[in-house]
Each structure stands twice: as C-alpha cells, then as structure tokens.
Amino acid sequence: MSAPPMSAPTPISIAFLPLTDSAPLVAAREKGFAAEAGFDLSLHRATSWATVRDMLVYGQVQGAHMLAPLAIAVTLGLSQHPAALSAPFKLNLNGNALAMSTEFVAALDPDPVKRIADPEGAAHDFAAAIGLHRRKPVVGIVHRYSSHALMLRYWLGYAGIDPDRDLALRVLPPSLMVEALRSGEIDGFIAGEPWSSVAVTAGLAEIVAVGSRIWRRGVEKVLAFRTDWMEDHADMVDRFLGAMARAAAWCDDPAHHGELAAMLERAGYVGQPAATILPALEGRILLRPGTAPVAIDDFMIFDREAANFPWRSQALWIYSQLVRWRMVEKDEATERRAADVFRSDVYRRALAGSDVPMPGASMKVEGAIATPTGVGSHSGALTLGPDRFFDGRVFDPHNIEAYLAGLSPR
Image 1 (spheres, rainbow, N blue to C red):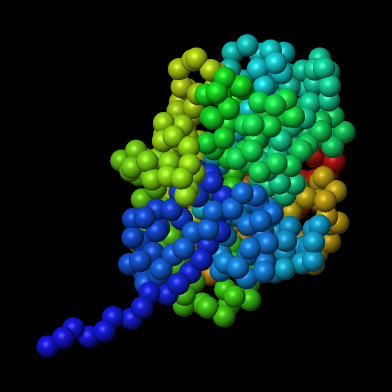
Image 2: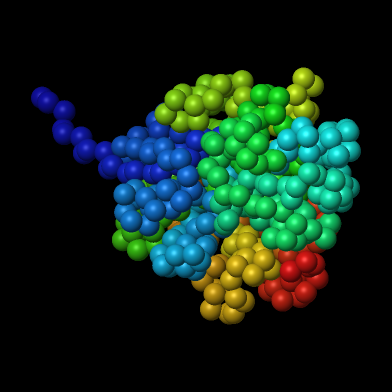
C-alpha cells in the first residue's frame, strides 16, 4: 500500500541584508525549522535597506528583515508614499556598533574599554573631538530611519551635539561601509555587525560606542510584512512565527554559536569569515586592532527575555525620536499609526499554546528596569533584563510630550 501523498510545502520569500542579525531567518531555513512548519523558505539577499523596503512594498517578497524605524517610516509615508507594514516579531535586540577611523579616535580617551564602559564620558569626548577634526566628521549611517542612526543621535544629543548641524551623515549600505572608510569618504560609521568588526580587523578603525551600552536591550531588526498580506494569510503567518520562535531560540544558545557563524559565513548570507562573525554572537568584541577582544554582555540578544515580543512602547520610543529630530509632526493619529506597526496581538495569537513566555502587557515604561525582574506572563515564567538608557532617562509611552520636553537638542 502506497503512502498517502504529502501536501507541498508553502512557498514564502523573505528579503534580508548580509548582517549577523539575519541569523534567525538563516537558521529557520538551514536548520529546518521553516520546513518542519510546512514552508519552502526562500531568502533573497539585497544590498541596501531601500532595496529591501521596495521588494516588500511592491510584493516581490512576502516578508523582510527590516530596520524597526524603517517599518514605521514606511507606514507613516516618510519620504515616500505610505504603505502599511506590520512587525509581529522582533528578530533581535542590539548588535550595532560605532566604528571611527584611527585618525579621529586619536582625539578620544586612549582606553577603548573605558570608552565603552562610560558612554556618558565618551559622548562628551566625541563632542570635543569634532572641533579638533580636520573637517566636519562624516559618519556613515545605513538609513535615515534606522535604529543605528537614532541611537547615534540619542547618544550625541546627550553631549549637546545636533547631528544635523555638527556632523555630516551619509547613507550607505552596511556592506559598503568598510570600503568607504578605507577610501576616506567617511570618518566612521554605525552599522550592524559584522561590519564594525571587519573595519577593526582591517586596521581601519576602533569601536567607540556600542548600541547595547546606549540602550540596554534596544529594539533593532524586525520581521515585517505588508499589513494587507499579513491579514489575508493569518494561518500562514502564525505558522511562520512559530518556526521563527524556534529558530531565534536556537540562535540564542551559546552551544550553537560556532555552527551559526559558519552558516552565516556562506557567500549567500553574510559572506564574511566566521572568525569575524563569531565575536558579536559571543559578545567578545575587538575594540582596537591588535588588542584582545573585550567581553560586552548582552551585545546581541536573539530570544531570551521575550526579545522577540513587539512591545508597542518600543514603537512609540522610535516615534518620539522621529518627532524629536523633526522627521515627523507630532499628532495623535500619527502616534497611533506608529504604535500599531508593532503587532503584539499577532505575536500572542501565533504563539498561544506554545511554551514561549508571553508578557501580560503590550507596553512598559522603557528604561526603568535596572536589574533582572520577574514580570506578569500569560504563560511560563518571564524575567526581563535591564533595559536602561545610558543617561538614566525613562520613556513613559503615556506621556511622550513630557519626555520630549526634557530632551535637548530637539
């Protein structure tokens, strides 16, 4: 008797950029989590975030590895016709770093470990170095609406720097940053790993700040869908998020980091040596050429502490920064549309009944957790790690106006 025919796997296409934090998508395909959920997952590597955005908006792919602020900006129609996007799953927390040329770094504190450990002092140091540099520093950012750019703005704003006045910000794809630095086109850049590590390994730069010391557990990349497609394919989305949750947990396990780095090394994914990719996974970062790597805890988080949960308060923090830097007007309707991009309701629906701990709320006061803290959960025990901003400020999503009033410059 022949076996009953098996149903064909459901094709799904996702666009991504060659970055270490694409790992959950790569693992979902390579470790079979997507296939076990019934998917034939195709990953389409792009060069720039603008290309990823267009592939998603114009329907060339069903989903995208995307900068969280970009998903909000596209939805709000910033710099383009609006297209409603939804982010029901965060791919990681933190994972970016600011690398500056060895020439610029010569004006900073000579101890690279101290710079990372003291972001307040390093911000003031950076402000002083601007005046000593031979020109207005040119800093590469991967997109105007990126977590990296907002982190950079937040960090330097603390020291009184207006990035739109005191720096020249140049948008470049992350994979082109190192060559732009080598040619002298830029004086430094902030990007996701492994590109800062590539620049340091090449002897071109030193790392002067890391995202995880500017905002502990700051939001980074999301898995984004067009909202209309997501709502028309609810069952498919739920099954895919289940596969992604398994993949993210696999990536977060230190026992898998060596295998994961080797996987990402392949030309179709990140395409850089595993030895350069592994440090970000392990949280052991080379800050200066020729020195020993330095341990930076929580440098990049894929799964633990509900890392994948799309807190609406984090979407609103991004919105607050867009308002602060005059990228969008503040009004209630825009605020609601920004918050609605992070779809905690879809996350809850998709992972209901799984063993994934589920936060009991969809918003929290960002920056208020100083030590690991147990919180209410609809399923399982959930502990959230420290989420402090480096300057000690807290963000109450119910009082954005007061939060903005305390920030300068704006």
